[in-house]
Image 1 (tube, helix red, strand yellow):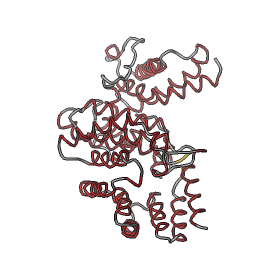
Image 2 (cartoon, rainbow, N blue to C red; image 1 turned 135 degrees about the vertical axis):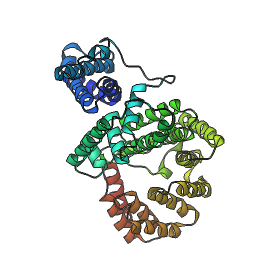
Image 3 (cartoon, one colour; image 1 turned 90 degrees about the horizontal axis):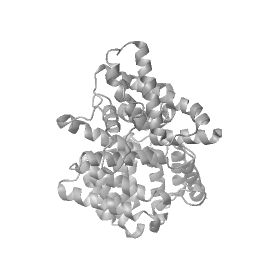
Image 4 (cartoon, one colour; image 1 turned 30 degrees about the horizontal axis):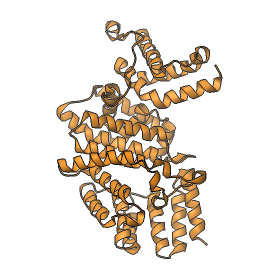
Length: 412
């Protein structure tokens, strides 16, 4: 078979099947490092074998079988589980379950709940989820966290060792343990979507494999926890964002701000699904942080145009969100709503307070927001400097071009 065809098939299988294959292999090894090594070897074998015999009908099932067999052979070689191997072996034809709307792929949920154990720092939870559940390269994760690749590799290794040393079970917890981990899982999925929604680096604005994976995981959690309002809120939030993904860039890949996007091209089915989830969550009890964020996103989606957006209501929702979740990023987003209700000068005072706070020193949207406010106030020389500061903080080519154009526009 033609080499390029095989390489594309393996790359596609990596995007689509990595989490299934790794999760199924961890169920055999109970060891994250051993499972990851076996899965990587399975993908290497796929490049050779598929070139000779063609791409199998179910690449994920083929990779799962090979990865499990590789892992079991390694375990047998080390003679660590000799007496238990017969109990672990499954028929070679055993296939991983196909995800659908009526079943929950337990292996992937086991893996993500393992990654999100409260014994790990949140940064480690996010990094492990990106690496193990999504197959994101360590170098890319390091870029997202603004650290060296060797530093991130060491952190991932320490986190996996901690899971092994603490005997953290590879299972979806129940009862109190489940409740203890749900918020961490929701947070990680949200950040995973954000990582793909606007890539930290590269030529493309969006990494579809990450946003798709996050949306898939959010759906799984909503199935697992049908009474959890925050799980429904997260799914609703991601659905609204996903509904407008094709309108975020225009001709030649140019970034389009919300007010420039063609709202008629938004996926109204996804928005309607989000609205149903949101209404049910709001009726069921007090709104948490994901329900509130979904409500804000829904107000944007429901407005016929940016000028007709209900900014006073959005500001009210941000006030409540900031009360229950005092994040500087939320405060920055709230400042945008303040600018639309009380004017850019009032919002600029809040943004400058966030500058002095320092926690968003490397967050490119802080100087970008400040630049927009300065431009609206007619302070274009200062706006150009702020746009340059934002430009220095992003590695994404689409954002770089947008910010460079803004510098040229206000710097005349």
